[in-house]
Image: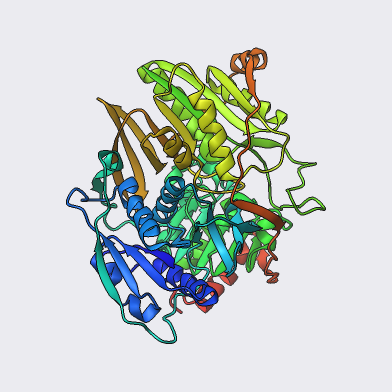
Amino acid sequence: MILVLVEGEAAPAEVSLEAVTLARRLAGGLGLPLEAVAYDAGAAEGLGAHGVSRVHVVRDERLGDYAPEAWAEGVVEVVRRRGASIVVASGSDRGQELLAHAAAQLDAPFAANCVEVRAGDPLELVRQRWGGSLLEEARLSGPVKLLTLVPRVLAAEPAAEGVDLVVEELRPELRDEHLRVRVARHEEPEPGKVLLTDAKVVVGGGRGVGSAEGFGSLEELANLLGGAVGGSRVVTNLGWRSHADQIGQTGARIAPRLYIACGISGAIQHMVGCRGAKRILAINTDRHAPMVARADYAVIGDVQEIVPALVAELRR
Amino acid sequence: MLNILVCVKRVPETGARITLTADEQAIDTTHLGFTISPHEECAVEEAIRLAAAHGGTTRVLTLGPAGAVEQLQNALAMGIEEATLLETDGGDWGPQATAAAIAEAARARAEPFDLLLFGNESADNGNYQVAVRVAAALGLPCVTGIKGIEVVEGGLVARREAGGGWEIFELPLPAVVSVREGINLPRYPSLPGRLRAKKAEIERVTPSRRSDGLEKVRLVVPAEDGRPVEILGEGPTAAARVVDVLRELGLVAS
């Protein structure tokens, strides 16, 4: 049996349906049934159309909010009781964390951030290193194998033929130690703030902006375009911007319609964060900067002169 | 009092382009420097701050080649007190083997650690699991991806970003926590710190290597999409042309 972890409350999360799509292809290739584990009955909604024959919904009165070890124990119990040979999840924060816990408990190998997986034993796969700037071809072997799929590399699609879905409650045998770590409360996002990850236009600044004050004109430009301001790792390390604004491998992964990269050279660390942009406009003094080579449009010159001119032009 | 172990990894400073060795097994580092992987540099800073605020000891550990002494010295120069090198002959160790070696080294110490800090994932291999496996091997609670730690009576409060807001975790000590860059801004080592680090004795241990179910076959640099760049102009006079492009893209009203 192949097991897929499905996140979501009222409905399955889109990134989990991508994982279901991959898991169903593996199940087809290996001639195995496909089952799912979920933490809310809503996440089971419509999974039959995606080829899932059985969903195990984890239940326990002590389980309120997210508790990584307890949730992972749900995966471990389904694997043991139903004999799963492969476990698939999305490479979301929770997907990575839960499969890491399950893999540790099962003493099984876990390949994070796969982009391609071929059915077979061992599994032959391609996974991301360096945030996707480098790919690793690897083999995953063992009686149970776990893997996560990089979000948004594979489109979720329903099965050619749906199957009848059985939804079952799963009551894992939780010990106190599974409940040692839990979410005690949440803090909601600031209302009205445009998140970098959701913005349709992002204006990013690098060392070429020159100072924290230099970001003033980038803010103006972002406001005029209804966008958000971000920065490279250099500027967050210099303290010109808060780390929450960092675009890069150790910051936000953005996916705007346009990314305006101001005075950013284009190191791998940064390109990992802006690869999802539909179009890139680079503003840089150096025509040969890697960022210029990877952009769709470029203006050659000093950010400090060009961005204010652009703001003035937009206000005309 | 907190006895803290912080685990780091030596990774190359890649710059703008990755070049592989001829056998496609590694990055060609002939012309590259090395650094502590970014999330882990923040783990080092956090260890120093927590020990300063609550008292206790700090030790940095890495599994890697002899050259990784450089990264241990960087951590010592920042203010960590002691260092351990689990010395390998180079090459990648998979996450199962790495975690087993770290857990063994932690278990071998007479004085147990109260807190083990890791980076959420290494910049290079990005396996997202070593901290969790070490925690499981030691029977300790674990939380990952943390951007804020507060020591409270009997345990920790740890903050993780989620959808623009925060999830606030509570967990008892001893514990394993993996952190993300942004939890703090790491300090630059002082000159006296650097001098002290050069002279510090580094404990060297030869770790035993268990088998790993994840096995690298080869590395591949992904092809660039090769779209040509359109130069819109030079200097401030290019602004009008940029606005035309913004109109074409439907980002400003025409």
